[in-house]
Image (tube, rainbow, N blue to C red; front, side, top):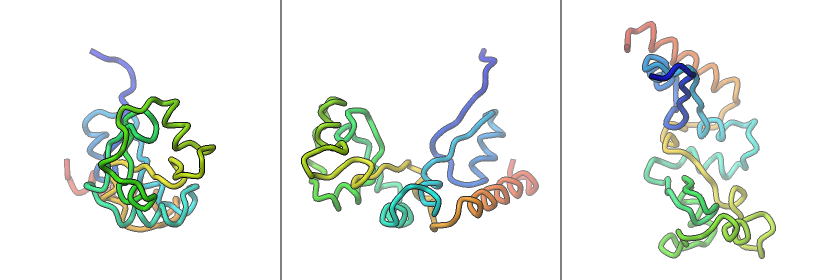
Length: 150
């Protein structure tokens, strides 16, 4: 039916989920949220800590900050002084950029003050170095295969 590479992005948080993706036929898998919490990422210390402290229910799908459906961290929206019930879900990309972009009128800025994360945020347990995280994921992946999880 399809003879190209299969890539999975979203929902991966550890070596077990990576092994599952491979067993289901994925050629490549992308893991994002967990790497935002690494010391090497460009995220602020507050952003990293919020990822550690957040859970699945802290993720909110909204168009308010980019004009496109984007997963954002509810606690960052609240910390920016915004009312979740007042977010404009009909905003255009241009309008969102004007309101929440880097050159706005001094209000909260998307990606700087209001942060994004995926539903796999529940798997972010600590702030660590990227090499340490890769090692942990590798060990979990190998253990999943060796221990016959599949």
